[in-house]
Length: 111
Image (cartoon, rainbow, N blue to C red):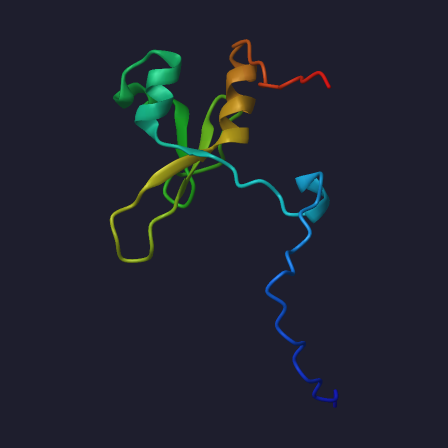
């Protein structure tokens, strides 16, 4: 068993060290989850078209998703109305498959 170590004394002047590069922390970025109406607005079609033609509802749709469909997942708790969302990476994959030009935003700064 580990020994109980006394808690360090409180130092009001101590500040945690913030890493220069946040990626060094090792936490993955949280993916953005799109709704069907957001996707419809991005690609300029009706919401019903997105819901019926372009989404594969994981756990609801029969068979396997085709490469022409986006995988939508339910993020609602059990026994509640489903809330279907598409991950940002899945939307980008689908847009590239369909021939959309997609550019990632980058920032360049001069010292």
